[in-house]
Length: 343
Image (tube, rainbow, N blue to C red):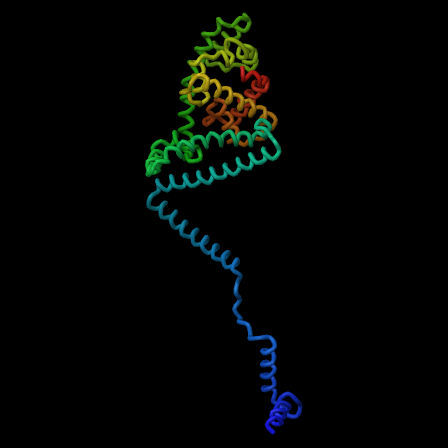
């Protein structure tokens, strides 16, 4: 009896014997869908863990930029002199890091394609040369900051002696001009000594024609006359053999040449000779690469840097004059054989 009642109720609910209202029918359909597909999903969308991490990083970066901007405005308003040094220092770090990445990329390309230094394009060759000098200077700072609490002393020394301890990336625009002038003034101090050594070796030149040319060259320089290209090229044999070949130079002559090339003169004679050979060889390789590229392809800053490296104080000279001087230099350099730099 009970079983028949249950069956009748089921038929009444699911069959057509009992007609339900539309509201009840809709509820039953929703219940059936819920039983078939599970509980209804939440309307909120949940991001994946990776998306959550990205959004968190974006939020932190945005907040950091806002705080950093407020910090910069605070420094610029209350400590303007310190803010200038702070800005130069931060930009210097960014430029040094960019130089390091570029140098690493050039080195990787050299190893991958088995390229030698002298086979590189001019700009890559010059970048590696300058980066090596910058790293050498930074390495000294790293060594003296190793002892405990020495880094505080290093910061003080960097502030007091920026020319001696810092590379150009960390100089202010005014310091760049002033320091380059100081270096060139020291370079000029060695010119009379070099000229004096040239005059002393004139009697040692065996060829009478070369002796006359060398005497005329020294006389022109003493009177402030810029020697012509053919005047210099006529004396190439004097600097390839005795008495002015690299192997025949005395310690005092090599020290004077080192000061003229902004190299340290406080080294033993054999190291001075090695450094002079290496430096002049690199400059000759740069000259060949620059002649291949063309001076017209250089930017104004690259032209001035190239002239300064080769002995001209280009900070106060017009760009066109620098390009003319650099062109004359390349005519002389490219007329010489690479072997002449090692003699």
